[in-house]
View 1 (cartoon, rainbow, N blue to C red):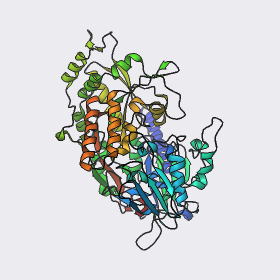
View 2 (tube, one colour):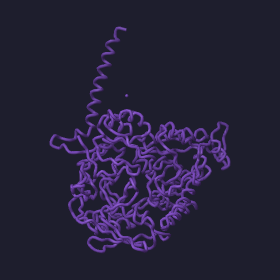
View 3 (spheres, rainbow, N blue to C red):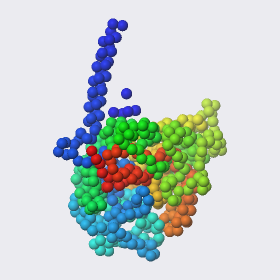
View 4 (tube, helix red, strand yellow):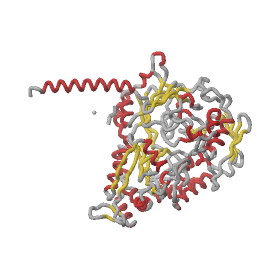
Length: 597
């Protein structure tokens, strides 16, 4: 289903036509078999919305999740939420909050009558359990802890129950993003507390293997608008509305309105496009290469393309800067590590990539240059006109930097290091993302023009992320991270010990130790500035601090930022109530969306 198909002459023509007819027949059957509308029986005609994802979920345990897509946008909620249209914080499980005059305490009041998807009460005890026993528990390797750490001491907040509806969060010193950190998903103590207390044969909490993707769906207890109904590997994830969800409509009616959400697991963006055009999907991310085709079909196909402007996702190339060893073996070939850790080498690579041509050819003009790890939608974003360094295409400058750094060209015009080693490395990305695969191919060509040999290798998502976060045996990678308004939400990328400090990753809990792991002075400085920025309550001073982090990242280039598309999505006209946002997409308000037949 991938859209990326003499006397004997009449006899041969007839045979070939018969084969093509039979093939077409089976393709139609296959397409019908992929159409989720066929999952519904006559007795089960319920309102549903069908979407697609490019890979299987890796876990149903939200504190342990590091990847996207994940199920938690549909199944999990915290005390507060962020409105993607305004960027403002709004009540969620908590109906209100009060911040103390010294800014060191926040008291939340929970909504009355909250329940979990199994009908049991959701209480203050669940909030205290979630933070004290999971997010703040050093035995649980969760990235959430990175955004909760405060000050140079890296202390964590304290959380305590005041009464049956009120819970107090306290910090040892002012913490500017304090309120935003309380949007983390709340988890059910009655379903998970025992797994936190109980240890496995290795002495680790059994929570670490709780709620894996092979867990029966009825055991996954949630508080979001939807609960997991079923999951079939490489096929689909199906969600059913949570009958105990707390939100109510204007007339007091229960939300969400859509009974069922289906996620089709597809092998590539080409496959999802084919299914959307055939009518099997209700939504489809619109990549630049599909825009013209879909725009012409809007009216005929009964859908609308929404454009939220520049995406908040940061797309970048990074080199593995890790100098450490595992069991005596270097994670990165020492010769390559010498290249990658040379700042002139990374700057030369940045100058050698023709990003404007990427926009013109791959993105069809529907994108912008990216130069910062902080999204343009954030008030802390530093623009080039305000002093941010940019690396416009300049292969001559790239070669000058390489020669200055001791590299040279042999008689075949191939780039070699001072010892004559050919500059050759492997660039990875996730397979199935056609835009990213095209970007990788252009990077290979562009760097080839300055004498580098790049072996571009797209990998299956799970294999790819395992290399980046677990085995750590990779040279270079092309990937993206979702940005937002608050820079501290990316703290786990920039703290040297952070769970997403991928370009120089320290082993996480449960992984094999690394010997000789080093942190560069500029890495330490960025980490210190992120601590300082989180402590600073004056907004102008905070902006200056995060501006400095962006200047340092653009000088040392741990991430070489590429280009970003406009945030666009096609949605069927049968889906009502869309309030599109680049920060939230089309379905951020899924609880109030409706579908018509």
